[in-house]
Length: 171
Length: 462
Image (cartoon, rainbow over all chains, first blue to last red; front, side):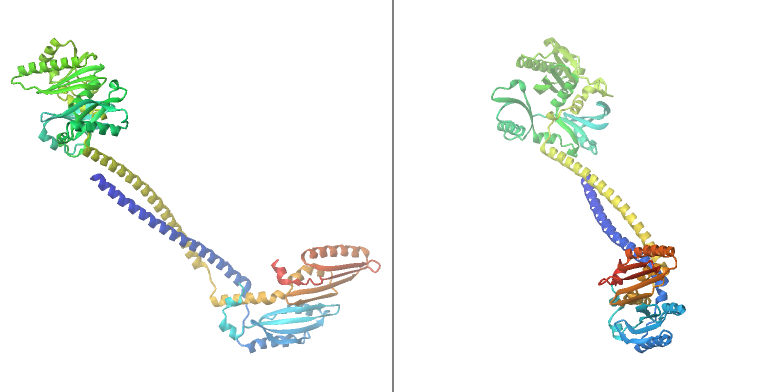
């Protein structure tokens, strides 16, 4: 009788240990999943830290203030034209036009290459509200001439409402 | 080392020995002679019992079994039904042994020993738990087993007496070939002695006549007769045999000669061979059940140990994982609290700026200008123009330098050409260089290959 009781007790203990093992295995897999998430998230946080540091160090100074109004955007372009028109013989090549994310002004330029300081200043010329690119550049013996495109970032109000920035930034 | 109890039942008395076995030596720890009625109480909680009981009905015979019956179970059934035919009302317990000497061409003769199962089981009713029975037999086999251990002779006659009982065994090659158990009824001790001597003498004479070919040289006395002077003298008067006393002094300790005769059957029950034991089905069943439960108990302990080991292993693994989890959690929380994350709105500004930069500044052929810089340092170009059209850059450069000395021209040409070669490796360009040695003029023209304007975006990706 004692043996049978012992067998029953052992069977109960075996079952208990079996279910305990099952519980351990389930918990193990849960913890492993959580641990993997911790590792991934920690790595992500490190990456985020690096990216944010890079953004602050390398990109922050390039941030431009995007005007909310198209008129303000246009005026900024016009002011830029007017400011340097005399110096570099600016001529409007193509008046303000836009695409989805910016407004543009194409300007023809022309000046003597003999004035080296003027040449350097022209090359250093910045459009602080946006970007300036030299689309055409022709340097000959006496003159420097070509075409500038001045870009004023500006998102159309309709776009702002409809799209999130994720949609317009290529992945 | 094992301790057990050996019990012989004779005339409503139980002769009990408590024995310890160590290296095949037996030490008597305790002796008891009990009334049969006291025995059940005495044996309470006592395990490992070797039992021998007296049976009034003992059937012993030699039976021929046809050669065609070969399997042990079939032989047993054949013998059982043969005896059952003689005693239809009795259920037998039987043991059988092949007699090698008496085989003929068609049959094999077996010695059969049988007892009435019901009576035998009644005789064992004092046992509280049948699973405690280590061995069980009848008195003649207990006596035979002890005599076989003590007597070297090949054939001998063994006589055991206790009170009014006389048990005579004729033994050849360690097997009983004849046995007789008689009860002597006499009024006085003297007449009892004479009757006993006469009975034994007659039995010896019968054995002599029955087994003429066997020379029984030794007469082994045991029990009360071994302590008696009169009966052996009378026996010797009529029989010319050597008389020996059964005294197991070589392997049994702590029991003197006189005591040992009282407990001869109890001692004998310790050495009974398996094929001389009688186990009713119920006892066998209980013993088998016991074996099975022992097996399962052992198995359950093994499983339990295995499961305990795995659980321990799992718990260690779990603890390690929990510890790792805590560590990773702290590392994550540390990283979380120490990472300055930019607000979403600000991030959107950064993203937008990067996007704009990629979209529009990609058209600026900065890297081409950087690549051409070494030539510009050597000489200012007389013509330099580039055009960006749909992300593709076309450019053209002309150099014209006049020299006063040929050596300067020579050195310039070498250096310019070297730089030009370097640029050619990086940028896909068409180049034309001419040197007018008469006028000491070096001319070079570099331009984008026809139909191969440079895609700034692709080149940057390279």
